Image (cartoon, rainbow, N blue to C red; front, side, top):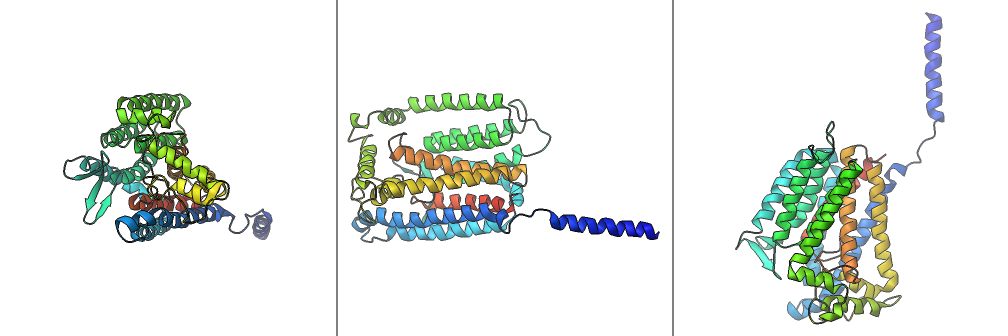
Length: 390
């Protein structure tokens, strides 16, 4: 018995010693992605507040006799968005799985409701908003987050082959197709493409067979091309990328003025608040075309810095996805990261004249309460996963 007890004590001491000699992660290394994402996202938000003030103040003074009209609203939405972000950081993301079906149902209902005459608010030929008292909301922003949560939940369930003929992929594709159809009816072609791209990324990160991914990609490209060419205004925007001067006072006006603003900025910019494009030359300067104002006032250096910050989010977000604790976290992180990156790519590409204008805002930077709120909410989920990543 004594020898047995001695052996046990000897083994225990060896285990303790070996555990102490094992290399350990430096303190805080586990949270490095969390810190990088948090600082980068907050930096973009604060820059966005400054640029919204600069881009909107001139028109606000002329129209509302108050240069602070838009920036005050944006600050309120920023505070609400930060509250949502912090809340979702503190709540374990696994608890969101139980809300996926509810979220997709609410988003689908809102997308239907916005199409009802005298219920949905129309502007510039599109019905994309709902009025809730004095506040307007855009159901498409709800739909982006809901479709990511729904897809991540169903595609991370065990024991189900991810092929076109099997669930849960068939269910995800059916819901995505329904959402895309409702978005096209608004019409909101830009958001439709983003939803399809995000769901495609989630499907890819779920480990779907390469053949299936290529089939879905091909169908999406063909469908998007056909949709882009069927409506006359979409066709004009697509062809306008090749030659905006063919209609300089129509579809080419915004690309031409955005290009002039970017060129005027030069290397170091004209200085904060000194943009000339915002003086009525560039419509939607504080929303869709805020990157043009950034390029004019901060120059090539500032505009390149913004792209660099988005690249940091993209690389760190995908690293978070690859090191997530489980498949559900991996798919959520990938979906949110691709959402932000694709939307930034489409917006900046349109400003630079490389892509058609879609009316898509620049994440964290553009004016838009709903967009900022739901982007920060989704970012809170990404930060939550980053904090728990390996």
